[in-house]
Length: 292
Image (cartoon, rainbow, N blue to C red):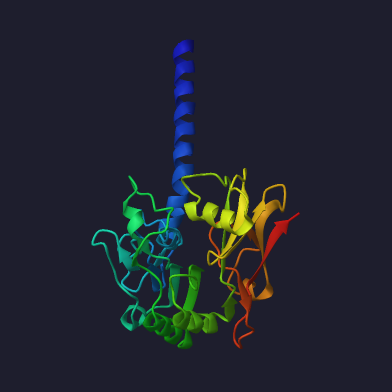
């Protein structure tokens, strides 16, 4: 009887622990279901979609879903279909037009770099790390006009990467610079934790480095690489020119109104730009390179 009672107590305790664990796991889901849905019409532009993984914009529908934000039709965005840009199945691109933003609240320019022939020469879903002919990419002037008109009527435009850089040409670039209140420096930059990583670092980085500096591209460790239209290059190496934190971000007063995080960091592609002090524009964050 004693043994039977002990087994019963242990079984009851185990069931209680399991039930508590299950409830803890379900609590976030229950809270999500109990929260009322909100509506926000978000249009995503991503021209760099050579494969079906939707790498450049997949996080946007995920974040909207996590915050229970639906579109005007009462459904959540689907990363595989709810965007404007390149279709990896049809192997064709579609430009942004006025009809796409007619009822939009937010326009998110995720990536306009594009898709290139070399993207399909690698085995598996691996984008090319070498220059090759463009299939589709860059913003046209008609698209820049659409973006400008959308912002003029009060729409919010978010430019993540390659908003100004190649292959977008000078005229649409100038229109977008005026709208965002910046001048692109013609530099692009990215941090790589391993400068010799053949699966991540483009092959042209080494070629440009050797041509500009006259030295072999034998840099080891991580580094922040700046490239200016293949004509100039600068590499800040971990522990040498680059300190801890790499690139840090701090919120400015204007950013607080949009709920920007107070602090953060960034290590992916960026387009260094200068503020043009255009009326009606303001800086929401300050970015600092942690150099030694």
